[in-house]
Length: 149
Length: 238
Image (cartoon, rainbow over the protein chains, first blue to last red):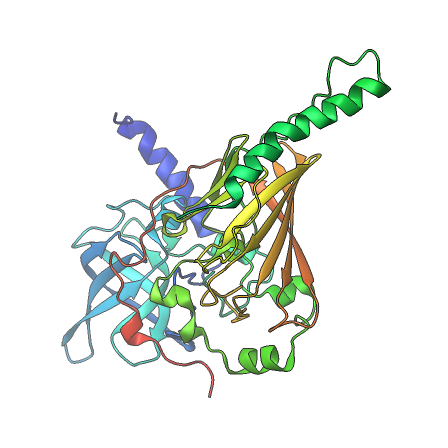
């Protein structure tokens, strides 16, 4: 059964708009935030999406980012679990290869070209959360570095 | 696996209602036999607040034994069993927050289906007791009974590799959980869990969380499918 696309789009927009209100804090699934990422190393990068993995235990997407000398580096970004962000409006085609996006996140502690994605600014201008901050932000006892359960 | 208590439980299940019936006949002539009130129907999808640190819900650290305090002091998130994609454990699964669970309830079993790794708990409500010589398992052995609007669940035999929360509160294989699922109304459950473990804690301690009905269905979550993080993890202590 396919829902008419005329209905899907407003629903998806509404869900993504809701996700916008989420705290831009990455919420992870099977490991804590601070065990992999550095909250003191925020990063904002813009580039074209090369691949989107809407898979467990975290979504991953990859972005070609052009450096100062024109050298292109393929960055990996990690978001929340697909089941969790599906409920926030994400779908497996929310990001497509070629989409130019601006990603805000936090670098991995090991210095690789990996970051936890907090928000993504999509080609249409919407900036959406890639985690599950809306739920965790209101959760009992959720600490700044406790993005796992 | 043999279950030596099964037959005796069956006998209990048969004779106990007869005994109640006999006692009831003497007291109330108009009674056509005592009918226990049906337990609440808790079928549905539920979630409790994400509670990564039980000490915050408790308002202090649990009453550690010296051994328990030493273990907690050295524990690091990198050692969390969830990081290795191991099962979440019986009480921590309830506290998972963003990944809900589904209750499937029959008179004989109260089943909790966790979205987290599609794991589950079977809580026997047919009157049986825990088996003797129980080997620890990831979710332990659970038996339950109804006290009015409350399901009281007793769990033992929990593998000591599970953690109680993300913060690194651990337990031994002597952990004894008592949970009370009290129906508040059709959309709310008051869940109280008591942790008893003489190796880790000097006395039992309890935490209460609200469980709310969710307008969703449990979805797939398989931790190993595209696991890429373990190579990047770093210790957070020392």
